[in-house]
Image 1 (cartoon, helix red, strand yellow):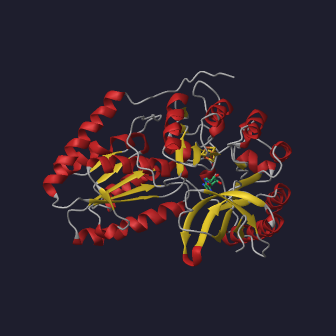
Image 2: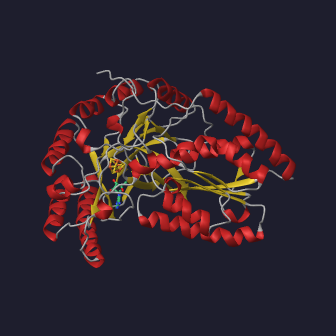
Length: 472
Ligand code: 5AD
Ligand code: SF4
């Protein structure tokens, strides 16, 4: 099926070029101000979409002439790329920004910048303006590509830069990129979200859905695969709404046909439009990891309705069983919110029973956090926090049992894994196709390679293995 891409908002190449000119200007400023190469500390909070933005922010800073440090203590430029999904995420950012005040009083030349989802909220921008005067640059999610200009203005004028205006959202192509990993690549296929789940701040801080051109995505992937990347992670708040002149399954087939030894993952899929076509395509594409992240959020139909999720528990479970029928051994992971306003204990039991039925490989669980401006933040919420914590813990226990059973069932299986790290005791950490962590004895050259391992019997949900053909 071919669909027309109607929502482009592509940043004109002339604007990207203008930012390149600012990049050169910053280079000149930095070389006149610093005897040594100045160091930037960039920290990204939150989801993989933010991680992908962070890699572009680092690309721009690298081109401006910054090297990187892993601590703010010796940094000349600090950038926090923030997340607003839950209050806890915001608290952590404010805590860390607060700590920078002391560091800056000893390093007066240090520049501090904040960007990402938090800065897109008026309340937060105002708080930084009034209570965090030592923050130099604040910019929103729709102007990320203009970092060189903001840095130049800040060095040039010494004045604070605030650029956090409203926008439906843009697509900026041709922004420099500095990937964190040499073998896992994050590739956004679309930005924004139009779903307005009642608890979620994302549609307010990330703007409307817009898809990147397939040609641009395919080129980025071809390049990454050419550079030796082994895992291509396609990113979007809801990849199934991809609408870049072809739909998501068609894009997946195109990517699958790129030559090379690599795996394709994608996240996140919204159950309401995770189609059979997508599942069939996933089953057909040999490079697509047989792992599906399919956030369910609740197992109760009334709560799902209040959340504006637009599917029922029955539809969700039907999707899960179709997916498993098509892809035996498929690993499914999910997100759940506990303590949504008005959720009763009986309704929570429906979540527990859904979790028991769906048998997720792993589960990301969250206690509801009211986000200003969202519909759910205005709903009466009478359940005491302690009760929500108790529900959370019960869900954790149920999921833990399932994870134990799944891990026990893996013993003896031979799997291809992608290795991440090598460390103490010659231990290699790796991820299975189903995105389960596994450890085994290996060698220092393994990170970034695929290895065949056999899972050992164990009594933990943490998998241990031995290299296939290895006598331990
Ligand atoms: N409170 C708690 N959890 C939330 N999530 C999104 N918004 C909220 C909120 N207000 C969770 C959802 C989503 C995941 C990324 O974060 O489960 O899938
Ligand atoms: Fe938030 Fe729902 Fe959009 Fe996901 S699909 S980003 S939960 S509004």
